[in-house]
Amino acid sequence: MSPKIGILYLLDEPEVGLAPRLTEELISWMDGRVGDGCQFIIATHSMTLAALKHAQVITAGQ
Image: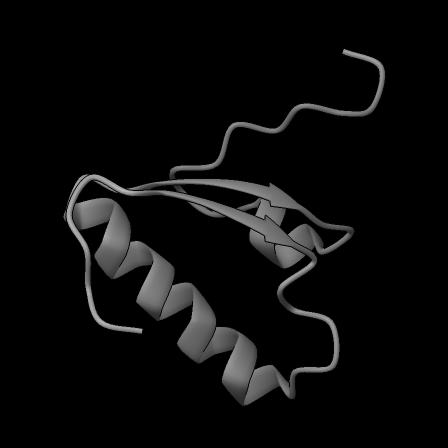
């Protein structure tokens, strides 16, 4: 994907099926997009993604 500025990305378990190295690349890509003013809404079971520095975790039912 080419970088976009100020975009809202909706991702459903983007880490599923990725090798750990590719998950790290995904996180790096997302971090770069956040720096461009983009936002992410992510459905995930990954504690790695939930622990990202810009993450705000909302659990089911909230």
